[in-house]
Length: 187
Image (tube, rainbow, N blue to C red):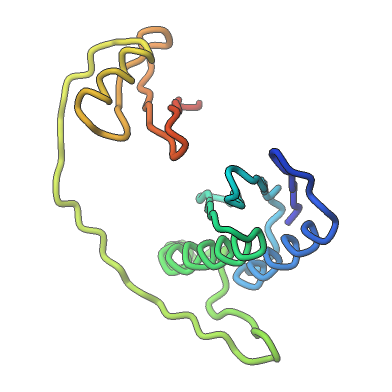
């Protein structure tokens, strides 16, 4: 994996780069072959909170995690732990799918050796996702500003709408910093 590490409102030191690369390198043990992905890492400091955001595009899955704390090194450790949990959740499902297709696997069956050569056991939690509610609604074409107003009126933190400018389905959402984001579909 290639790491694209950048800082927002901060300078990324060589020691910080090495620490990020070393910690994210731990994730490679979960893969049969090291993915040729460009891992996007963004480090930032806002109001004393040290944040890290990591995005790892893989075939068929996008791993993404974000963590904030008072210490950048603690944030890095936490985000790697979060990514490991995501990999464990996806690996069972993906390996089962690839076994049925009788092709190569993306994730290893067992993790490699951990610290001091000790084997790392992976607990396979077969969490069942239960759909408890389905909603249907007519999407009236509207612009982004109207969609934000509608979202605020219903008191949700996201809103699905038909964009009158692009004629596509979009989602507006409220970010953690109180501003808004827009998700557009890609072809």
